[in-house]
Image 1 (cartoon, rainbow, N blue to C red):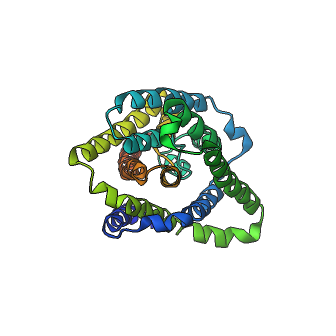
Image 2: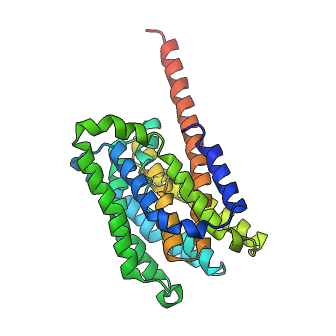
Length: 302
């Protein structure tokens, strides 16, 4: 499933453009996302002591203070739907699968876990407060009390259930088996988002779509690079880069579709493709780097 993920992601996006009617799938999205989050929380292992990390302050400063401000100022001429979509994408918490990527890069697993757990649980507040702070809430026509309530239910219940399930040993094998195929739900969420906005996309100019693509690429690069530069050693550099850049886009897509114009789900959908491409390049680079370093150690005379 992991090897086929990117090709299947492209297929889901193309099918979303071809097959309209994604808005009718909207009632299913909270249930699908809750299930996806439950399994994602279930497969990562963490301890309370891992949560206290200095790196979470770096994350807060970049993702919640610097990047939202710069993005808000730079997108004044962009259509409101794309603008809010870009903004939501930038402040979206770390992907729950991020620690797995960090492990593959031999990064600081504890720091990655800290950012992932803290900011996913914090997301009901961060999404709501930052959106209200930067945007004219009357223009958005969003019930923020309902929005924060939905997010709290959507995040906290799967997290709590995952903690309970971890303590029941007889569930370990079946849940881990199901978890290996759970990305199918993620692909369905992407398909639904693209399908819901496909009709509107046909009315958008190519220039604006190109701008959104470039803006997403810049946000991705800025976040990964910021994390890398702020890390104090190689392990923390890798962990912070992935924590800041690798986003929980399924959560962002649901939030966009459920509370805003369906077009707001396009930036996080594009972001998925870019972030997975960056992760693949990072894994390839650091794997080869470790391999070449190992070869030199073998050849070194004793």
